[in-house]
Length: 227
Image (cartoon, rainbow, N blue to C red):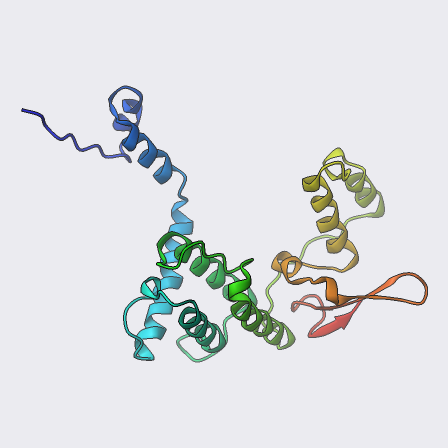
């Protein structure tokens, strides 16, 4: 008579015996679980709990992952991001809005009935990105951006970094690193502000340079500024 063996993948003893005793399916599950970061899972669960709390207060039916219509999902998430606030009614910080967006995107990619969801890049969900973008701009303009101060780089340190082989632009990845660093130095972008920079923010100047219109976080002046 065959028997079913249950393996606790979190047990060190069982991990050590994985090579010889686990089936192919169990190995796949082991590495899938191994790749998860505990803190990331907790953060995702926290934001999803707040989203479902909001949905319950609005008398929405079912859970967000059960929504099968793209337009309905867009409307519900736009409503959440536009109205999300703390228990005391105050606004969340820019970093919190970004964290919530990332957590919801991650959760929906794994659990939504709508296939191939990518809130960051999918053209289907550009309206959600627009609402989040404007929410971030509003919060930044009202002092809700969060950054941690640090010592400025000296000119020779900047030159040394730009001359490093990992920023030589020889591959798409290295070119992206260089652009990221240059934007951080010249435009004073911080954290997720890089992801909100658009080509339409650049305007050609008469001196063959560019004027860039950006929003800045709290320690980067305030509101919309011109660089």
